[in-house]
Amino acid sequence: MIKILRTFNLHFGEESREKVMEDVKANISFKGANLWVLACAIVIASVGLNVNSTAVIIGAMLISPLMGPIVGAGFSLGTYDFDLLKKSAKNLGVATLVSLFVSFLYFLLSPFKEAQSELLARTAPNIYDVLIAFFGGLVGGIAITRKEKGNPIPGVAIATALMPPLCTAGYGLAIGNLAYFSGAIYLYTINCFFICISTFLIVKLLKYPKVKFVDQAREKRITRIISVLLVIMLVPSFYLAYSLLQERKFAQNVSQFIEKEFTSKGHTIIFERTQFNSRVKKIELALLSKRFNAAELKDLNDRLENYNLTNTELLIRQDSTDLKRDILAEISKQSQHVSEKDITIQNLRNELSTYTFNDKELIQEITTLFPEISPFSIGKQLVFINPDSSYAEVVLLHSSKKNVADAELKRLSDWLKIKLKNQQVKIVADPNS
Image (cartoon, rainbow, N blue to C red; front, side, top):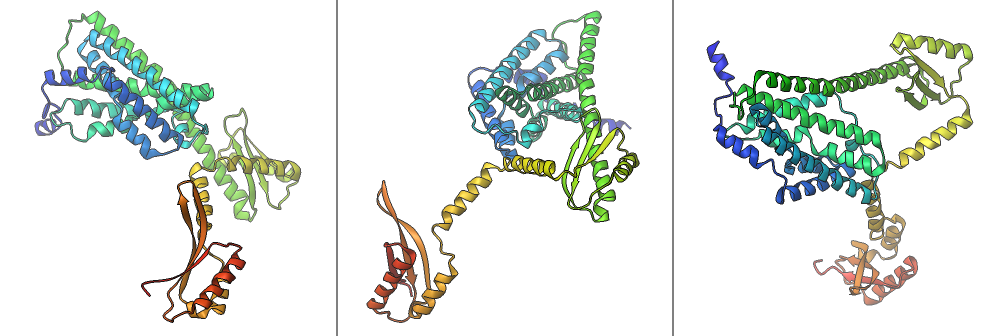
């Protein structure tokens, strides 16, 4: 039993406490370089959220110095160093305001205002975010007190995700969406608070000495304040987690209901929409050809309870005019979600098509009328007269083993000019043939 306890002893590999406190205090301040690094990291994270790039967001979290004052607050609470606590809180406030301003400015100026999945993921925190922040903070607190810091510190920066919620809050302000702003700020507050609390617990567990003497009454008051804040943070997150669980169960039950009552019976669903957050939950469907009478619709609504879909109403859209309008509206909505990347790829494909020949009929005609030049390749190239002037030229490169007469090559050139309606045509013999 003693050996097992020694295995889990946190004092093994512990850095000297003076050195740890020195490092903690050094990372609290947000002046000069630290503030510039934070602002740049916020811009990078905002771009990542804007273009929905997870890799860019992770990079921003790795270079962010936001953990410093939060860890400092945890150490100051654990050692009852109230001067350090005030300094940590002040610097965290400065960092938060600067981050909000930079992200707000970025999203205000950005032409792309659409909420991507990476942004939406930071607008509805729940108990799982609490667990991530708490255990991430524990790992961070342990790593900071080690001689060998190792890999945990970058991992904690990624896992606890302080930057994305701040950027999402700035996005919410920029587009005037207070729901996004409040959800993201709540997630950021959860992360800060539970990283601080878990650091506080590590400091207590390692029995760091108190900087100031605190009587029992004041110590109890501090503990009571922390407990109240814990409840304030936990209750909404539990509620949000419960709501998320219920919504996912509802979606699973709806899928099961549709599969058993429609799809498995050969009915094709062409329109589906669900409403979970309304007073009476709704399932709206439209089928390709099947029509239901009033008795059949009542029977289907009665069967909803068999799939744990209580307080739910099934609506079958059978009015073709309304249905067509809704489907067109849905298609229009989906078309707006085409990413900039897809548009760029399509533009590049269109540009590439202007330099390639995929006209099989033309290739066949050249092969038939001028068999002596085969094999050959044909394409377009830009010819630059000067940096501001250029023209497109059709080039046919042939690798014929025979000596092709100049007259024959001129006849081919004249034929291509007429065929392609382009006077800029060049016939070139491959020097390597």
